[in-house]
Length: 87
Figure 1: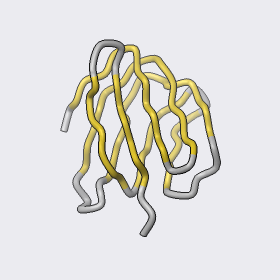
Figure 2: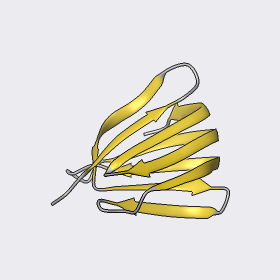
Figure 3: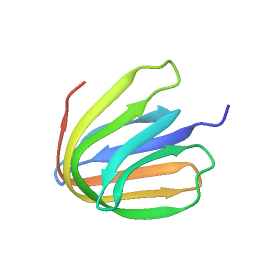
Figure 4: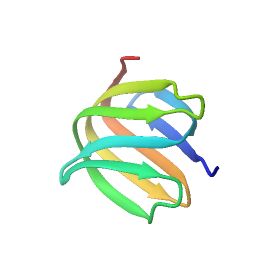
């Protein structure tokens, strides 16, 4: 199974990084779900949850506000103005 390499950062620190099966985030265009093999994407991040599902089905939840969300070659970067790890 192909996996995503995910990095979630805020303006001042790294919040979470690792491998994931799926990432879901709220963008200015609506909520989007990303799986391995997704086409390249750059979107504005809206205020809300970024949810990451790890290969062992652990759920990582980050409250994020502002910034952007990018996907390229199974690399997902979430760069938020403010972000807090919830779970």
